[in-house]
Length: 410
Image 1 (cartoon, rainbow, N blue to C red):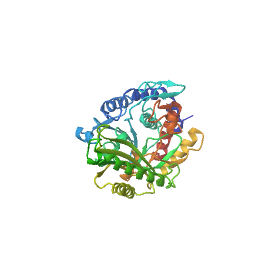
Image 2 (image 1 turned 60 degrees about the vertical axis):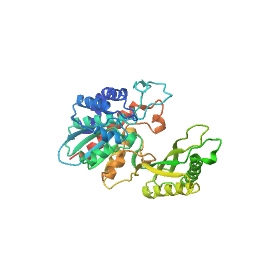
Image 3 (image 1 turned 30 degrees about the horizontal axis):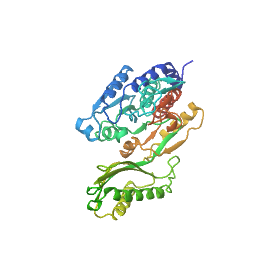
Image 4 (image 1 turned 90 degrees about the horizontal axis):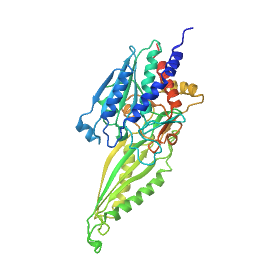
């Protein structure tokens, strides 16, 4: 009896399961911490591993000066294109850079140990698993024997942790890729079609140093900064009452995450800087959110006219909202994920911001789905003992392959 393409995909992935797990382990064992962002070596390994699978890989190194301007040492973007005929171009984007491991691990963060069916290591869930998932989904689609029309591209980029400016954004702005539809890294138990935006501001308060025995001869930058902090925390309380109508996103958020300044214990501080993170709801205007924060800071600083306050924007990541054309992708993912996982897999938003926004800003409809447990907390993402259930990797790969089959089948 002849297999259907769906059955062929399932059988192919079952036969290559161990190979896929080894592929992911090799990605985890090669560090790609960002910062410092010296990620070209990982890209070189990834390209070699993809070529060993029979895929043709384009290497697009980012000029050193451009990488440095993005706060990185080295970046090479990878693009795989598999053309099945005339039809839409679907891009699959996963990032290979990861946050540094930090403290508290019980497993080697670069060991890729498997314990009770979970693989451990930095980036195993966010999002080196999706490089593996998308690559093997493409191989399974190719093996299906189905009559297909269109092109699948795999985009492996390396600057998601620093904003995606020299990764997806560069690929799209330079015309290296012009997809009609895109899928970006996510987890297995939800399809994401919206996420928060994010604004990072650096506030610097400049005063004048003086001996602590005669503080009135100086200008205390910390005193002014304290008033600004109090105003920001009051604004945070107000923002928490602003809740998104998009399921999964919740309220607007404001966090002061970094403070530095001062010279010594016995010196009036002449300079204090702080950095803040403002999460922007899909319903909000990023420009209005930024103007509001600047006004809060200016009003608090006005009480200390001798101090000089400057505000610098570090990042503005716009919220992701569904674009026309994404519904078909979302429907395919939800149908197959619910069938493969044996439960209803919802469509939702998340309070994070991701590289998906760069595709949306370029007019490319995009959703997020990939390999991962139910929650970020279950994956230990961005903290010690990051982990991934390998069964979720296996099933998510099948979901992606079947969804691509639906979208490209004649």
